[in-house]
Amino acid sequence: MTVPGAIADPQWRAPIIAGLASVPVTLVLQWRSAGSYVFVPVLFAGLVVGYLFAERPPSSRRAGMQAGLVGGLALLGGGVRFLTDIPEYSFPIGLSVLAGLYTALVVVLYIGYFGLVGGIGGLVGGWLANRIGGSRSEPVAR
Image 1: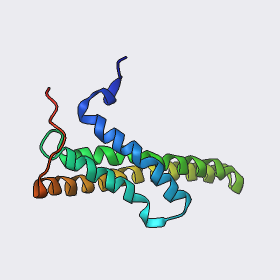
Image 2: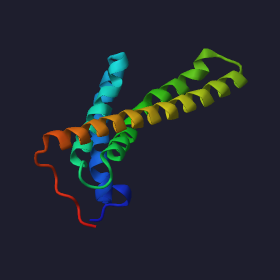
Image 3: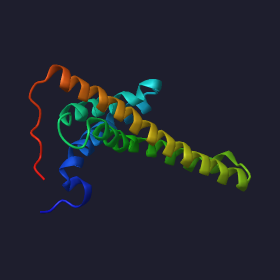
Image 4: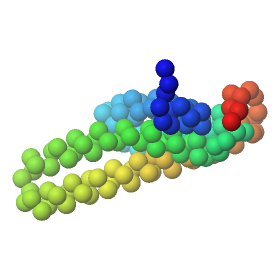
């Protein structure tokens, strides 16, 4: 069985898995209204992949950003839920369309923010790996 797309690429596999692993925790934090702690799972995912990718391509920052972008997909559920609630507020059609466009823009910006948070986690993970050393996964041959 072959795995299509980015998942087959060894450079994307760990960031995708770490980002996807952060999604359920992010959703639980959103559901429990944890406020500013919602970004912590993505930060931790970036830290883990940054540690793993400290001495191989892609850079630890880039791997963390990839994990953060994938983990940021958890925000799509809240955006879709908000979009489905717009008709219930009985705005004029123009305001409803505008609210939908702004919602889409905000969701995209927050996914980008999660990518940045994952990148910061990746930088910290790479720094930790270089600081404390230890065994990490072996580089993948190209």
